[in-house]
Length: 429
Image (cartoon, rainbow, N blue to C red):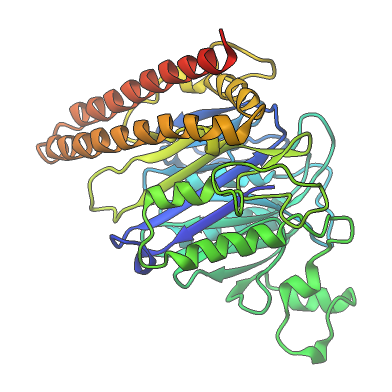
């Protein structure tokens, strides 16, 4: 499932683009943080994605992202050029192929190959047209699905929706969000060349009906629960609109923790309740929010900025500052199919299970611990970013990277220590 949101400079409190995503995946599918450096590749090189091999480019950008443990691609991430991308499952009339590029492949490929949101849009759509989408995005069942993407950089953002090799893209005016359904309608400004003619040939759209409504022509929600995404999309849009002009990274983290009227406290609902699927999702055994990211996208001339990543459910978890320019702590990359005491993700899964015994009673106590930690880490990150920028301007990029690495290492140590304390306290161990 998933929800992805963006606020462009005109809508944020300090004129910085803000990108946020919740990754909704199988409840016990661990994620890890992955990092890749800028890399050059020989002429003629090829790259193996999850299911298909495609030509490699001459140079790939450095990036950091959140990765389900068994996948090549990533759910969301940001690269050295301050391009951020996240994807969503959508339901369209055209079935994806039995093999092809996964949405997560396309997120990673966009991060590796693009220096701007415009370039990322061009990269992803060209790959979709050439290779198609396909293959299962799940390790435990065979279910190929189509994707939507939200792509942003410091100046602009795009919403991209697809139906196998067909696609439509809409620029974001100031705030925007996507969920698990096609919603662009007639607002697209870029599209696959045969978008309209193909829909007409299939009988999905009348040639006399005027400008193609992409959602009306291509969406297929016949087998989708009616409460799956509409309320979440409306809720995300409402929360963005309510804070337009005052949006900050902490506010975006708060949005990702939303459960409608109960706020950061999850209140169980019947499966047919319109609000059963919330922005911070607790739909076990279907899907849960299993990772999240909030990243400010400052102008490229500005100092390094932390991308804030959360492993596990954001309502009972903490976001940690991470930097493409530093070296990610190795502990954050530990994840696997089975519970593992060394894995941060599995520790947060244990904490969620404990909180769910009495969410209203325990959740606020856990939230208070993490809120205090996030405030502390934000102060430390701000100071470190200023120090790193001074070193960078003095020509010592290695020392600047060391400073940012130190922030990540300290944040990880504090997070692991406090999560362990919480598990022992709540579990009675």
